[in-house]
Length: 299
Ligand code: GDP
Image (tube, rainbow, N blue to C red; front, side, top):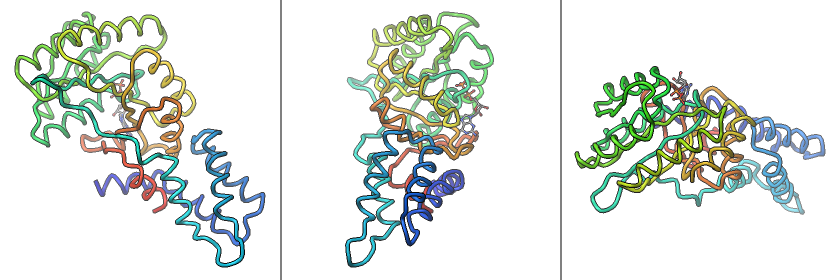
């Protein structure tokens, strides 16, 4: 976890340090406030949150006699508030009535779904939980193979169908297997062909329906690539119209200084970022925590 925090600081630290340097200037003139705004916008925080944050900072940094406020303290408090420490970020990985928790993982191809499924499985196995994976991205043989490789690596079972088979039937079989074996959690990887929204809606809707004949879906994780900026936000909106997203996984934060997207996407969907991906390795997934995130930003 320390290593992950360092990696986060490496990618996002420039943003935090840049803001702090600007806010620590002796004289906060209009040029400085403009630079602060630009820094926030460049980090993909979004227009409305940027305006709100700058307004709060202006109010709190105003010197009215006495000592000037501590820039670091003010910035830290305002950033934590913006990321919202009150959101419930726990993963719902356990089911009720002896049934497994069902985690459905959605997102466009390339966002990091399969990798994230593997990483979550690894975390659960490390916590002595039993897991079955469902390879419902049946349109891409490579995706199924990739998930099978992860399953082997982590030491969990994967349920897969023949190439091109019905994703819903694979999801059904995976959940059935999970129930029969009495595992703690079933994680279902899905296809993400966004070219055809109606088709995707039908498919994900069907996947969810057939799963819920057996057990409720406890968590729907939307995987978003942090490097895709506004495009990622559009994808997020489309998916949230198709399924009830309960949590966001922001991947590739290691390769982007645009950590502000955490704020933007939470606002847009009203759903918390629960996990962040910080690399391609098996251990490069961390629970998201508002205070720890801001601390990593500010170094
Ligand atoms: P999917 O198509 O959504 O299932 O995406 P994949 O899981 O196949 O991931 C696409 C690529 O992104 C792969 O090369 C992954 O190794 C890479 N990837 C996934 N998550 C991360 C991350 O957090 N950081 C980095 N740097 N790469 C990642």
